[in-house]
Image (cartoon, rainbow, N blue to C red; front, side, top):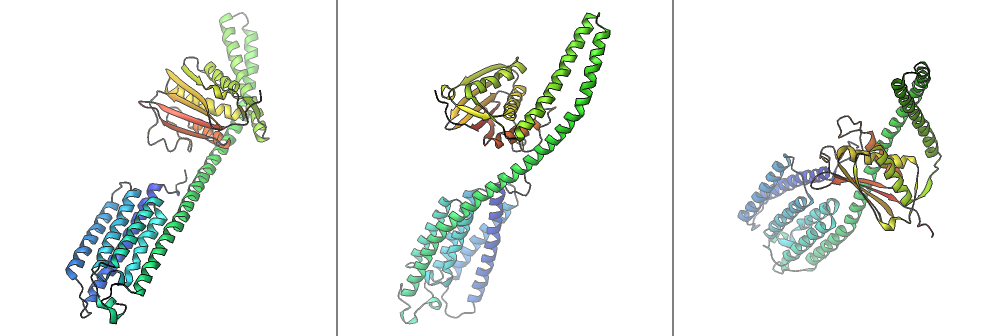
Length: 426
């Protein structure tokens, strides 16, 4: 995983931290404005009420700063509640300082902009509605200040063209910001998710290429010792032809050496086919039964429960041996985790082949779950972590997906989805 990529939780914490900094600046300006108002004569400012509101606002800010010192996760609801608190405190301050005639009332657009850029649309519309409602109430209910009167000749008039124009400008701005900025922020977040996935795929592909390079070198180096062992075993069989027990052991070793050599040869052939992009199409029922049969031959001790939906019988799948090995790796992992019982459910969901492999093992720890398939990390004592890495990379290349979830009360559910071709004609 790319260490520079931020998770949603990290982004929310950073957004709350930026909001706290902005609120500190706002409180500093409000305190300076309150001190400056002391030099103005006849401003009729209700200092007691304003000081109480500023004290509560400052206490909330101190609590937020203290909360940011702890590692508790920040949620969208908490960030929305923080913005709603700002809106309420600002509306109370504007109520005691001229209401809609206060030239700084347009600051209510700031919480809307922050919400539109950082929160889902439902939170933003709630904050926008509260700001518009608060501004509308400030047109009629407020403590008037002569210094903010637009027309001193009609200072007693609650409404005038200028104030109504300010309100209409605020209303239109709030609606436009909420609609367009929310859409833009959503698009940016979706693009960020796609970019993070591409970075992870690139890192995974680099690891796979490194493993493939090492495997090719190892195959080349192993081929020579295998040939030497085959020659020596042939000579030993000739020398000890009369010793039946030893001959049986030598024959078994010869078979194993030939089997290893055949595997290396098949690996080279499969690599050539995969490089040239040659795939074979096979009936889905035959393909799935072949994979399960191969696995059962290798793991006959497993108690298997197999279910295959009828609708999957007439489908076809395009594949090569890499996909076979990816599914076999997952089946082997399930068998290693649950030596007594493994269940396989094969079905078709829309246009995807769906394999669900259920085991009753110990499950995957929360620490390893985000890294499996992305890094060479294994949950097994003697595992290398290559199986999950290669399976993830292979299934991803086929346009599929691999997800592992908890199988309650214990175990793991491994879900593989692969795109299918057209239905075979009868």
